[in-house]
Length: 223
Image 1 (cartoon, rainbow, N blue to C red):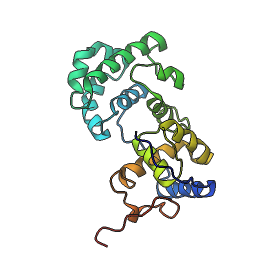
Image 2 (cartoon, rainbow, N blue to C red):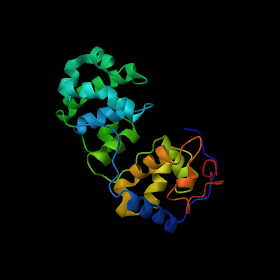
Image 3 (cartoon, one colour):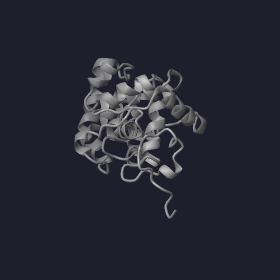
Image 4 (tube, helix red, strand yellow):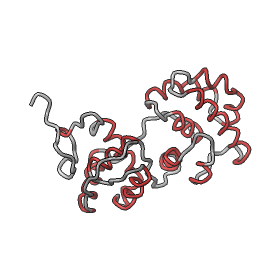
C-alpha cells in the first residue's frame, strides 16, 4: 500500500458521529464472502487476497461442496485444489497454502480453527488481516482488518491516518467507540468499496461527508 499524504486527524466526537451514522444506515453489516463454517471462512479469506469477493465466491462454491473440512481439503490434494480455484489470481500459491494450512489444522489443532491471532498467523498464507477477519466474523471478536479499502478510508477521511495498515488499525482501535467495534471494519470496508472509491470517491452521496476531511469533495455527476 502506498504511503498516504499527511492528513489531519478527526476528533473523537466526529469519529463517534461517523459510526453512529453507519449504525443508523446498516445496524448489522455483513461480509460478502460465502462460507459454511470457520474453516471455509478461513480458506475464503486466504483466497481473497488480490481478488474480488465475487470471484472468490464463484470459485469456492464447488471447492466447499467437496471440502468443507481440513481433512476433506487434504484429501483433495494440491492439484485438485489448484484446478478448482484457477480462476482466482495467484491461484497456484494459494492452493499450496490452503493444502498446507489444512494439514496444520489437523496436526496442531485437531482439525479446528483456533480462535486466537497468534495461532492463526502461524498458518500458511495467513497474516494479521486474515486472522482479524476470521476472529471478527466467526468468533465475534472486536478486531479490525485493514484491507486496501479500509486503509484508504482511514486516511482519506482523517478518521485514522497512518502510513501502514498496522498504524491505521491501531489508530482505529482508539477512535472507534467500544459499542461499534464489532462492526467497524465491515462498515469501513463496504464504504470504501462502494462509495469512497479509490479513483473517484462519490462524495455527493456519502453519508458521512459532513465530518470527512477529504477535499475537494466530488460533485454530483452532471451537476
